[in-house]
Picture 1 (spheres, rainbow, N blue to C red):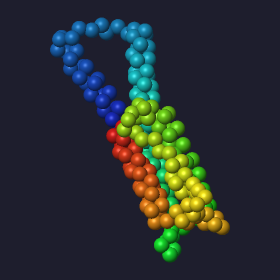
Picture 2 (spheres, rainbow, N blue to C red):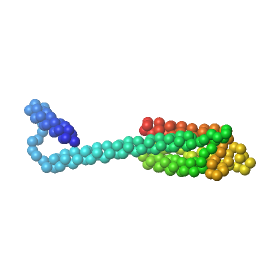
Picture 3 (cartoon, rainbow, N blue to C red):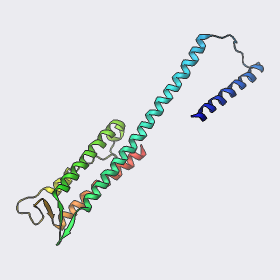
Picture 4 (tube, one colour):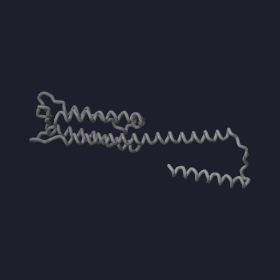
Length: 194
């Protein structure tokens, strides 16, 4: 802050010196009379300029800060998806996961996705409307993980709050998790360009 005051003083002094030199050259003609209205006009313009510059810089800083938060949320979604993938356990050629894990993490991921969507809509409306920004939806993942059908217990079943999946179903789940993670990555790229 002290440095800014020194810079302003130096600039003002240089302007004053240049003004004295130019007044002696008879190149510029000016009126030496003091006019209060011109002084008020000058002060109002200077204050308006400083105010507009301050508002614009605050807006830019706010937008940069929000972009950082949105990218951080996309990283968080990616980490939660990776964590969910790591919670599957292989037992006797089948893959299992606790029901509470799927339900709990799906709700948390969905909540973060909604917060991110609202922030993008508020601060980056043009990005949200573009084809490059991908909407992330985990309904398909939840459906793949929890949609058991009678007669297909060898593919997917739930006993004692533990979901069990065939290797093919597990691959389908992993593919969907990877797809969602890729969408997070693509959205981060789009936001970094903004």
